[in-house]
Image (cartoon, rainbow, N blue to C red; front, side):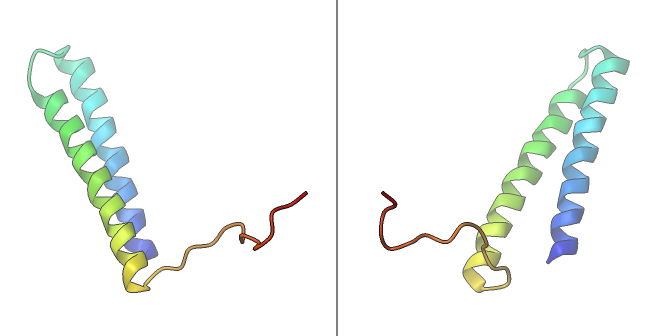
Length: 73
């Protein structure tokens, strides 16, 4: 699961770098920049949904601060 998330992050960063390249090279005259940013948004949403699904299936476990039953005073 860690490798899938790592690949997704690489795809997100790669599409962001691609958008920057097209923005500098084409100066925004073509739709390549918008397409690359659209892919980045799509990859980000897909990663978020994958993490939610993996948590529901029990493939990954959530960690963090445990909640106590009594409120601190």
